[in-house]
Image (cartoon, rainbow, N blue to C red; front, side, top):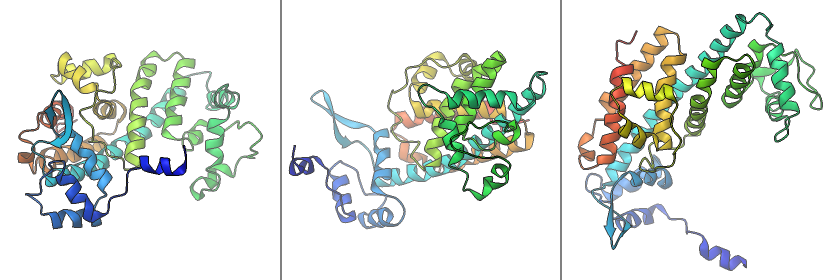
Length: 333
């Protein structure tokens, strides 16, 4: 296929002046915001791709047995509102996830201390040995660590070791090792450590944490987390811990299966579960509970009338409302 043929398959980039007419053609209204206000918002506050990603949370017309790309009861202001809510949600989620990461490290150190045969070096050396000789991805963690050598933050740690990229890393104490690996690598180490010492209770947390790592990556890169909430893209059965968690929140099997079939809803649910499981500080938990309540019962419902006809978003709100009232009461102790 020649270059000209390739070019005909590419969507043309829309200018801001062309975006509003394009959205109007999809039956998106400009009643609560004028077209001029919408253009200014797209120019100064958000990009077209991010903003329009929320449109799939709204109902489309169903014609001749197929959904068409024209929306029912969707105003541009609704998309703007969801973009703002999404930003606030990401801020709270990121705060929760970095706390989960921190307290996972604390948990590992506390577990290590109770194992007589463990000196804080043995398990790290075994993990690095496995990484160095891995069949599929040899030296993945090694290379990740080497990339950080130039960082001023890590210089104090790295200065103690002779870092030869051709050699296997070894004898890094666990209390330092945990500070130089990524969250995803931390979860992998946690799994390796838990399996080696047969810590069955800990092993059950790994699958849940892996989903939280996915959410952490999305949040850290400012990816939208409240778009495509209608998708059913996760068919895996939830962990028994999550089933019990949701049962205790008054959420039954049908609702649970429906909501957890969406990856983003599942990841947020797992984060809400794991935060209170992992974080041991009462002060940190109260602070996050206050943030969640303020977000959920003030900002999210500020324009609740926008969503009167949106059964999808109303049902998702009801689902999380049950979790928050049960697990994140403002007087959590």
